[in-house]
Image (cartoon, rainbow, N blue to C red; front, side, top):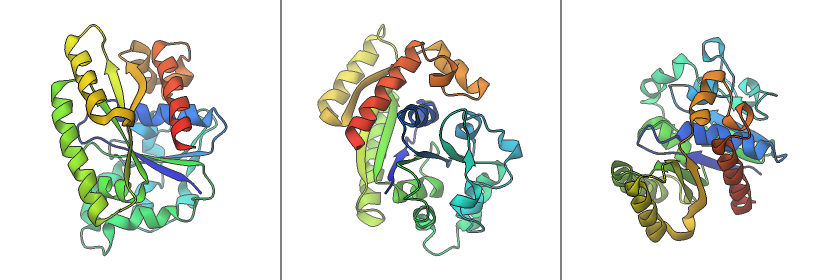
Length: 254
């Protein structure tokens, strides 16, 4: 039975997709069977996994519109080590098309039932907004991983996200839990970063992953090569941090 984990933050630019693809690569490298679902219309998790989204004939959009199954359209990537349920240009229109559909928040949850025995982990890269796509991801998931930058505005956005998770838990998915928070793009030279990090530690305690992802040029470069940094430059500081996060993730969820 798969553990389904949504990677979500309503604020963009917090390394959410970077965390999703590198967690996928990191736990796949440990022999785990992983499916990464790109639920963001920007399709960055798709391209960051080495897949040309312009050539994706069918993917998550077709699953959400119930015209196909997950098993029929998942893409295998030997380069990154995990399977991808890709996004293409059609996904942006999915929300409009699903407005009149009954139980539209649970479409993804129902679709994943057919593949839960095929994977150890299913990771869902949610859009940076509270949209119908995000609701589908959070309704399907057991855990939410929240990547966040250690800055003031990110801290404000975090309280909104926690409130959203509580509402989803109340009305759509009573099993949903915060699986952990990841500090990303961390700059130890910045006193504000350290102050925000200390606040997170006090407020969330053991929900906060010990691993901190630093700002790193190689992490920023890797997506342009269609690779997780764990494969692009496994000796870089960013890659070493994501290796550590993957090990911590497996220790927490297995």
